[in-house]
Length: 73
Image 1 (tube, rainbow, N blue to C red):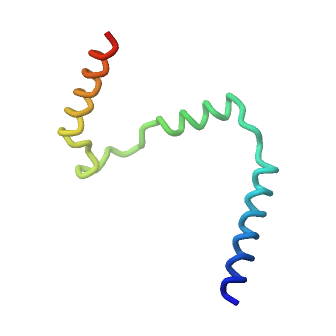
Image 2: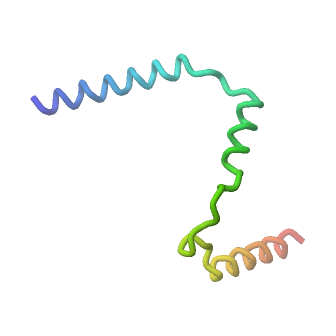
Image 3: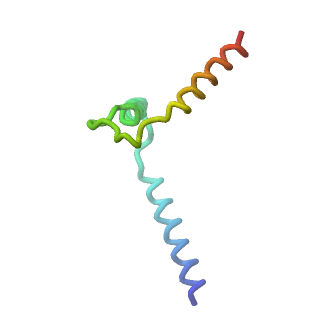
């Protein structure tokens, strides 16, 4: 009985997703730009001390950029 209920729930979820896809607005360049701006904007509060990027990662990132420039030339 439980397996049948799970299949019914999965089918309902699938149909709801199909309905959402059918009525969603198509992407436009304006909507894409707005979403990208939202993703790239800075927050209103400074990051907490434990949210800072570790210096070891910054060094690794610089090394990767340096290596990619070497390969490109």
